[in-house]
Length: 318
Image (cartoon, rainbow, N blue to C red):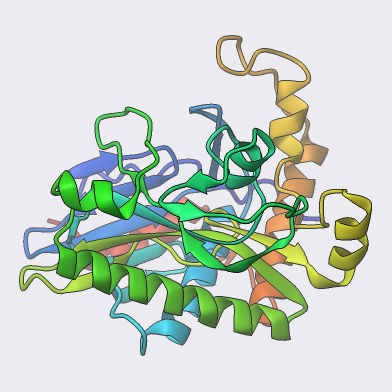
């Protein structure tokens, strides 16, 4: 059973400068245009933290590492070093105000997902025209980019078209052309490699920034279980035929458990049982192994994960 005591619930390290604590990551800006990004084990949903899942931060950091290594020929990324299994030292970038979502299938559950809009009768969305007659979760004629505005002030991301991105001055034509080409190439590489592992990369989001030279750099994470939807290829044909949800890495166990017991947006979150925490940890570990084809080796050095992270980041103390 997963050791439920090995949790990095926070990485508040006073010796590191310029902290920024997000929902899942704890970050520090170094004075030389580098940034420390520490992936905690917190799991977020309903705009709040629900729990901490053992080894989740290591899984996400190492999954992204696998994909950064396998896509560096397509686009440079922000990674400079990995001093710890949960930590990336990256270039400090100016993040572009558009989030890029690439979709290969008619899927999704949110109000702005293309499946939801399609079922309402819309055929024109995000600047694309979809044909009639598509079934739930069917492959699109070709992957499409469905960009959204990136809400830096806590607001909600809003759907955009390419024309709106340019007319609003969010990106230049050259930036949009470059990002579009790179995103589709990254997605194609991801789908190709996932297929060899018996997986379908359904959709994913990418975040880009620019460095001091104006070069476009891939930031954040790539093709992780949190930023991407994967289906298990073996079960997909039957699910498509039956109109059911294709089998996937079901990380929604905690989300569903909480939503069944309270209004998660307003009520206190009930205590989540240890067996639910352990099951979710195993989902993340299984996802890492399925996506990368590598065994997951949990780093259990140090008295606690925070002690280990502090020791590994000591060279960066100010």
